[in-house]
Image: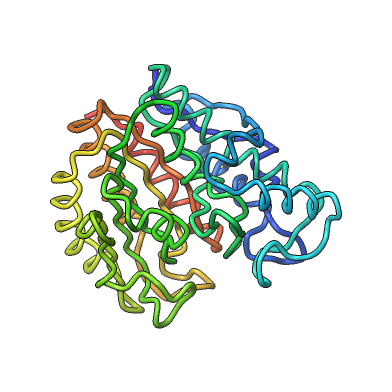
Length: 316
């Protein structure tokens, strides 16, 4: 079967994971791909090999000083890249650079017409800031892609949608005053969960007021609540008329994740992916990138990401 969906897989991406029983381990890609093979989804996509970003590409978003810090701690192989959640390990710079570089390579393929959509299971590192790591995220591949869209391809109206259980604070606060980034984030209420941000009243600043939608979900919320909220998400995104769609589909919002308390099923992820694919087709020639994001129950992430991939690869 011919496909216009590229999926980035490889040892260099799997290497983005932390040691000593850390919940973000190096086995997450394998858990997903084994399930994708079981479901036969490999026949509906094109596999793409990881690509490493260079410093100029990382510095589209990150400061030179921060990139240098990651390089140094990567060589040392110990210490923390933030205040205690994100440990350094030997080769962390190369692993994180492959996450960002693969996202950029997928973007290039899309913009050159070699594929319409891309899925990168090991990606969506939405907590990293310009000058620091945070919450298991070293380089913010999403923000690097946003900057490349603007700098390299002249695309300014971008829609970013995040259903990871944690608020995408690294993206939100970096673009809080950017009127051309339509931002939607459904996450567990920050009063109960890291990073404690993403309140409903945070809708953008200055000229960007009203271009951001933060939806804190109460602990225990499931598919019913998700589907109700999604009706408003669709209207919001259609009114934004984006030129490109970015989707962070973290699976830690499913019931049974060890780090959170929402109770979605993979049906929520399928619903979001199907909706966003249609919006992308209507607004921007189908141009869309999906990132795996969080998810620490291996069965959950495998099923949720496969649900997303099936929707991206499904013909109408």
